[in-house]
Length: 335
Image (cartoon, rainbow, N blue to C red; front, side, top):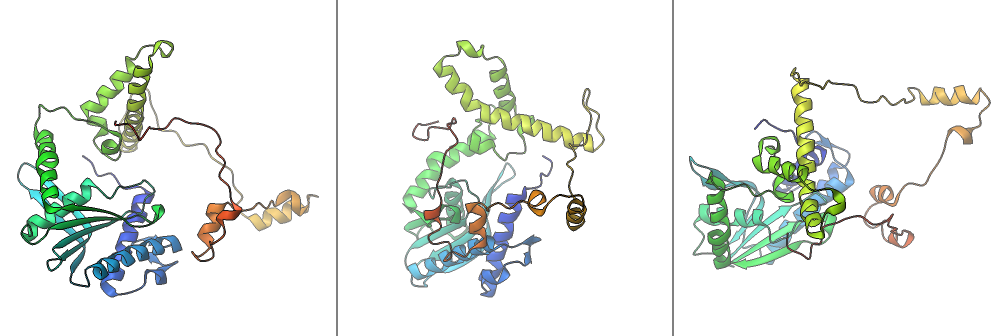
């Protein structure tokens, strides 16, 4: 698949991780980087605070095992590397304490999407750590930590080494075998397909489109059919967006797609000299209140300008008012 550049949120998350790693290795304070450029991103107070919360969690790990712990940050862990497939990833933090017979895997999440501590990603990192270090006889307990400042306190999931091995045997290994089996159909889902660069060539995605296309008229749909279609819609919309993005890139590279052309986006007018505009409009009889409007900033914007201590009491001055109802997944039901 061609390389797909990450979005702004991904670049910001990468920069925060890089800052945290730098400060961990140099024993420096992330908050001193506010307003400075790091990894080609200008760091805000929130960015630096996220890095600091992550480092605080790491030091809490050391305290938890009374510093009887070997720790590593941003370590690549190959779980399997064979001619048939490669499986692994880069763990944010690994803490190994053989005296406490404990392995701790910690991961910083800078996004807003909630990530459960019982994460397949962290289980995979734990397995790779156990394999590479030959730790099965030395570790009894595995702790998985998710540090996600957008969602409050650090979340932890604890499991035994046997439970991790069982997960590998009953969940991970069959999934890998199915992925390698050409006869096994792909199993698309919202989370699995969200960032996949293969949407435009995936037969399962194309099948989703066909299912929606062949659906009966809306008026005769049953509740069961509506439920099935709603489940598929998000993935179909993602597929359509991926095709549009792919078509744009192809045409920007010189490809010709019958019936379509590149067109400039709608141009929006903006002032080129604001002080000159004020002088110009005042000279034509308008008053300052007519041409310059003031409005109170939003609660979210105010929070960004304040420190954590200054934000105390701010919630008492706000309210949350819903604009109406919308459809949402029932998380209490299995998908």
